[in-house]
Length: 95
Image (cartoon, rainbow, N blue to C red; front, side, top):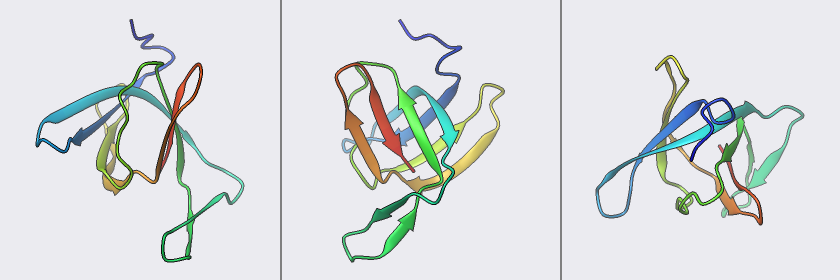
């Protein structure tokens, strides 16, 4: 069961089969100038760290996502997910 206080935001995307998917998560602004090195070698600045509940299904890198806060306000529109990682006790992403 998802703890809506711990994961108050919603990430929406279209999966590889064309299905709309909604995932509860928590967006946290990424401070401190953290970069991702793209396939072309360019540095890309992270805007957000994203925490997902344990057991979240993998989201492919470069998937276009929309993000909504608990009130339904859309604060991200059609941006690429740069990283998704499944850890021992959590799932984590970066945008």
